[in-house]
Image (spheres, rainbow, N blue to C red):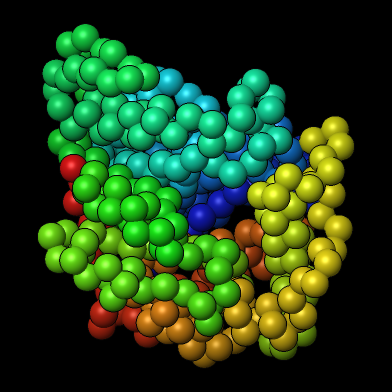
Length: 349
């Protein structure tokens, strides 16, 4: 299994942007040095849940400070943007990074941010589908055009053109929805899934839809979870406390019950939320190195994934602890999966 990292750059205490961005750069450089394969930045707007509102802009800076690690947004909520602007920014990032860009696309799930753009989440599925196709054509064809219900684009060429001829694409899919998976397969896109489901109830899409994957065996399946490789049991329990802020904020924003005030997310406890033991068993990868390996095996077997992003920075977890956890993960956890690790995928439509 291949390993990368994922960052939202959240700050429950509403730290200064300069502080948060300095943390992000240090983590990115550490990930590059430690041998993680990919660095993904989320795109969210207008809350302290994530300071990464312009991930491609920040990734351009990170590209200059790293050497090997692949860089990408996970995800661009494509309905919020004109697809050609997204394509141009991705092409520029690919040039600046020396061809290290991978592209994560999806709808986004926070109505709070949609409200501030004067939009309704999920109200134009056709535009969403066409936007994905426009971005792919723009990045994979030197001269492209498009004619659809929402977009009509005459013959067009990007300047700058991307360094990669076929930039890898990733799409967020619902593993229990066959058409969602089928769409990604038709588009030749790797898939992100299984982020919020309990680990005990993950769906292995390759087993669930063998006919879909038969024609695209090289497409990757990836997922993401909070990760903390602890020094001891007390260290793990405190990391779980920090992870709860992230979980509560995520669920509240997803279901439009966050009660955001002046951009600060109310991450109060949720009714019926999992206990500490349930969280450790079924939702996060937190514990000793051996416990994290066992949990990742469960995720790998349950989802059939060959890529995993660790969300090492969550809640109010301090920088020293984040970096120490990453180091322990690279040293003590990643080697356990080396025999089955797969090379970075360059499959795209």
